[in-house]
Length: 246
Length: 272
Image (cartoon, rainbow over all chains, first blue to last red; front, top):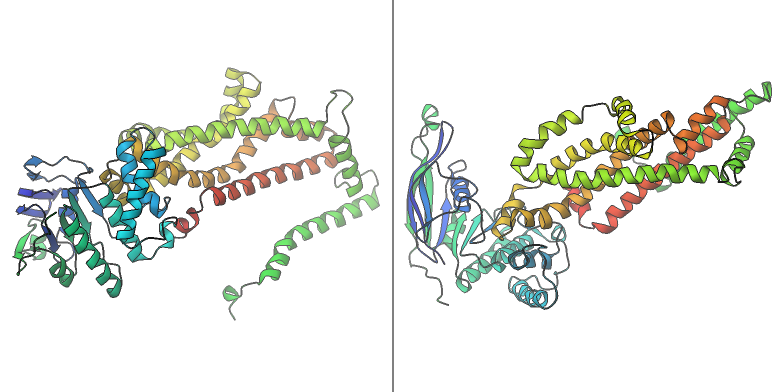
């Protein structure tokens, strides 16, 4: 549950301007979908929000406080690939966030605190439809199940903001529809503000409360380097979607 | 059908795998038989019986002068040096490899140095080691460490850098500190790769061991074969070489087994 504010943000790599004049207010509990052609800077935008990249100019505020310039526990993330850890079982993957939080030195929970965390993790796994797969390694799961696991893993740590980088892009249509249902439910049941990058317009309009399109306004070859992408469309979904109150 | 598409079956594979060994052994005994027929005292290609006699003498009888079984004491001396050196190499490489791969600061500090150090021919340092550390055990262990450590560090550093960026970011979004990322994400994923690296370094490790023992030692497998070389004792040298090969092969197979048992998830990650 967090409001995000982009205050005249620019991102440049050397002479190459990727994004320019990005000003945006995201309300708490919103579900934002970022769309646009490839190379328009949506992923760069998400990386800045993640703290992996810093804006060249301007600043990003979360609840009025400037963003820490590195990834942190208040912003969870699910990538298209490599979001879960291949050396941990399904259960261990979900437990990891809790173990890192409470065990600073050895990074593992033991005894009663472990049992409590396991119970919680099992409940969450049941919710994302992964009951019975606790002891498998991610490589034994299908793509859809891996992304469900990634969602559960991110949510277990209780982030305020969830960032999704084309999370369902590699999935079959049927599986994608199922995971959309799950995503909606998770958004309603938790206190998340969600920012999702997608190249699938129908996915954007099906899930989001607000769809934001990035585009380069100037696309002639000699202009490409010096003009970055801007926000070209900012559409509130109607009828308005509002996250269920907790 | 094209040759590249002809796949041998299980049985054919077994026969093919055994063929080079059989051919080598056959070639040896034909050559040996021919030479011995000409000159029964020939020492170059000894017959199986004389090698068996030598093995019996070296491995099953107590040596009168030293009061020990020579092949056993040689083996223990050599393995002790080798295992000590590899233990030092792997543990140091694990710490340094993870540090250089994960921490940009450590990378800037150490990566160029390790790169240069791995180009120093270790055998060229052997005289220095003998002068500084004396002719005892330390200089031999040090040679093996110097010979294997930089390569393992470089290999592990690369493996750490190969871990998907997404995983390291993800761990941070789960609240992991640098230490926790190293402990829970990097270390467990690097261990099976360390075994790969170690397997590749077994060859060089044995090379440096034999070299150090050949030059200055009073025990060890390498010492023995270079000692009996003076008497052209091929009947001892050949069984020793086979024994050394067998030990190295066992270590390699053991490491492979260890990797499969301890890291069941690794096979599918490597297949990607």
